[in-house]
Amino acid sequence: MDVMTAITTRRSERVLTDPAPSDEEFHYLLRGAATAPDHGRLRPWRWILVRGEARAALARTLTPKAPQAAGKGSHGRQEPPLRALLVFAPLPGHRIPDWEQLAASCSMTHALMMLLHARGYGSIWRTGRLCTSPGLRGLLRMADGERLLGSLDIGTSPEGPRQRRPLPDVSDRVSVLETVTAAGAARGLREAVGAE
Image (cartoon, rainbow, N blue to C red):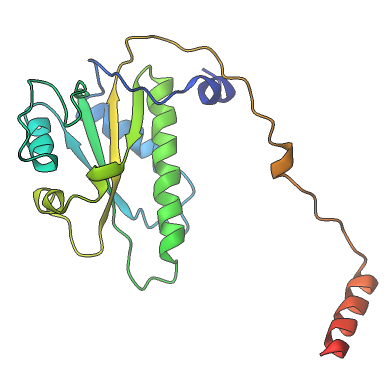
């Protein structure tokens, strides 16, 4: 699958069934995703893979008083075969600011979603209550300063391959900086300094 086809046919899949990648396949794809832009190669993230019965423990932590039907999540939807929880683990006080470390984590996650799609898997990045649950912090043994950025739910879409999306018109999101001559730039600088 060429890159443009992968980008224009990927969707956030709400219904996911088996199969999902094995731990070994997930690690392999993550090695590729980890080559995404990451200033300083800090890798300020970690993943926690949740399968099988562990999914029920996760659901109980999110909604402790609501009984869960077998295989159903906290909103009554079918649980995916694999939930990969993304923990943002920035290096505090580093010369590379937190926002760049967060951007690197998001870039890596998008690359992982594209690699999963190219392998025939579906995924969806879920956030919401998952990211703010205090009980979940304890269950996941999150350190101070770490934040949960969500769950990458992974499996296979029963709908099969998707058609390409039409490319959106983004012309209003691009501008061109006009070049100026060095003399003109210097004159403008002198005028600005003189005005102060």
